[in-house]
Amino acid sequence: MHLITLDPWSEKDILETVEDSLNIKKYPEKYRHAVGGKSLCLLFQKTSTRTRCAGEIGITHLGGHAHYLDWRTTNFALADLSDEMRVLSAYVDIILARFLKHADLVEAAAAATVPIINGCCDKYHPTQALGDLMTIQEHLGRLEGVKLCFIGVHNNVCNSLIAAGMKVGIEVTVVAPEVNPAAVDKALWNAAARKGLYKVLDTGSINVGSALESVIAESDIVYTDTWVDMEFFTDPAFAEERERRLKKMMPYQLNTELLNGHECKIMHCLPAHHGYEISGELVNDERSIIFEQSENRLHSMKAILLRLLAHA
Image (tube, rainbow, N blue to C red; front, side, top):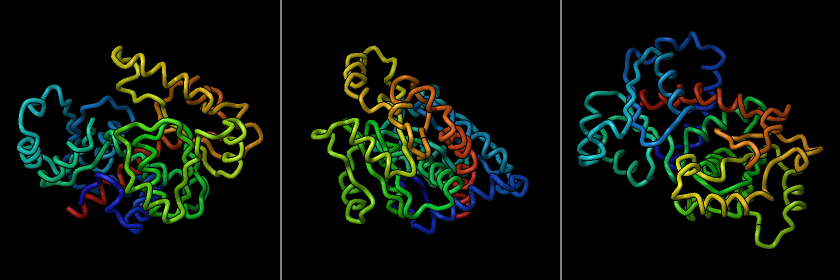
């Protein structure tokens, strides 16, 4: 059993993982020796704060060990990926992989003989979505029937929120004048739409301000993410595209004026660019659950590790 996407995970798998996450957070001492010395390898091509800390600290809290590998300091960059995954599988019990390309994760999972966790790729971010479900359950007391609006660039996080919502009954509305090309997944979007749990606001024919006000008024959660992926934000080769996106996306910024009078919870998977997709005031607003959301990545990662190791 892997966690590459949420698609093969059942509703039961997801709901039990959310429940386990909440129990781990509430009773951490009960899980101090839960994995019995097993080893996790973190194999990362991309920078990371939350995913890396959640993996390293999470496995340690469970009584295991973590080994961090920067892709650039290994032979993964030089050798056959499948060969290297078979070798790495012989050394550790589970692997948390943070790759640039989803196709490489699929190849890695096919070759590995231990569970693989997708710690983020260009198409999906399932560990983020599971942590988000935990946070929503914690703050709203339910998942089914929750209305979540994602405003920004349709990306890997948005895809995993749609996939998660389709499993547990969260209604996801997406307001996205931009879609990251790598995130296009029409099969996922169509499946969620058929269930009535996914819809897109047509940004090509709306008055942005009034349309955002309307959808926010109906939402329990308003969620945003960076408009430019972290690996590209300061890349000189991406500078022209970054400026084009920022100019186009500014009318979709979450700010105090837009959310004035609305009681929705505010979420962001972090890191945030203050003054771009979200104003600094909203990050620390009383409606913001962003930092609880961030903390919960640790507890939900522990639950993911336990579930996959139990099935190994």
